[in-house]
Length: 332
Image (cartoon, rainbow, N blue to C red; front, side, top):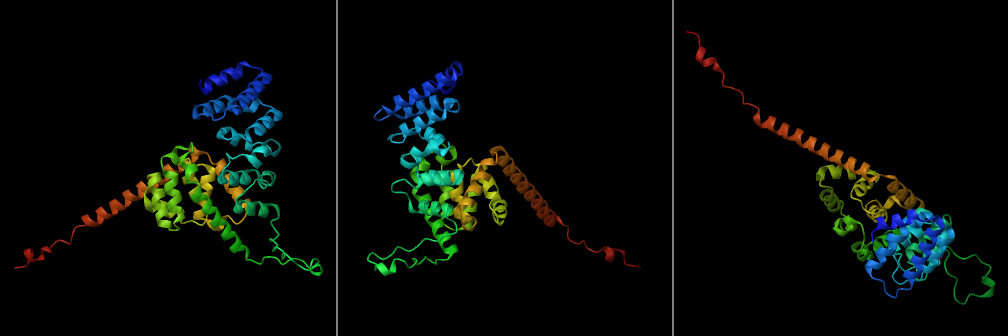
C-alpha cells in the first residue's frame, strides 16, 4: 500500500479515528521482534501523513512506545524529536535511533529544552555534553575536580577553575566535532539523501577534513559542475554564505552541511548560538533559489571564459606592421 493510499484512508476518517489508527499502527509495529525494511517503510508511510492530526497525548504515546524500540522507523523518530520537549523527551533520553549528528542538529534547532533532555542520555558523547554545558551556562568555566581526600578545612575554599583560553577550548570542541563527522560514515551511507548515496557528501567531507582549501574547492567544483576559478573566488570570502548556497543546491542535509561548514570555517562556530544561526539560515534557504544562484555562477564563469577567449584571439590575430612602401615610390 502506497503513501497516497494511506493519505486517502486518513482523509476519509474523522480526527479521532485517525488518531486511533496512528496509535494502533505504533502498537502493532512495536510488537514486531525484528521488523523488515519494508515494514519500517510501511509504518512511516502510514503514520507520517496522520502526524499533524494526532493530539499531543497521542504523540507522547508514540514517543514512549518507540523510545525502547530496537529497530525504530527513523523518519518518524526524527519527526517526533522535532516536537516540543514534553513529547520528544523519551526519545531524546533513550532512543538508539539518534546519532551524535542528530543530537547536535536537535540542539541547534531547539536549544536548551531539548539539550537538557539529551544531557540525560547514557554514554553521551563528551563533545555534545560540552555543547550543552556551554549553552546552559555560557559565562562559566568548568571547575576542576576537588582532590579525592581533601581536608575538611579546605572544603570552604572555592575550587580552582580551568583558565584555558576560550579560543583554545572552542577549537578543541570543533576538533572533536570533526571526529564525530568521521565516525558518521556509516550513517551517511544509509541516508535517504540522494547526494549522500552517490558519494557527493562523502567526497566533500573527506576533502574538507584535509584542511587543504584547494582539495575541497576542487571537489565542490566537480559536484556543482562549475569552473574551479569561480568556486575559488566564491569560497575566498570571509563568510560562509556561498558555501551555504552551494551545499543547499546539492541538497545536502542540514546537519551534514553544518559539519562541512565547521571544517571549512571553524572560527565561525564558537558557541551553540552560532550553530543555531547556521541551521536557521540553511533551513530558510529554498533549494531552488540556491540552484538558481549556482546557475548564475555558471553563466558568469561561461561569460568570463568567452571574454578571455576573445581577448586571446584578438591578441593572436593582431597584424604585424606592414612593410613601408616608400622604396617603391622613390623620387626620380
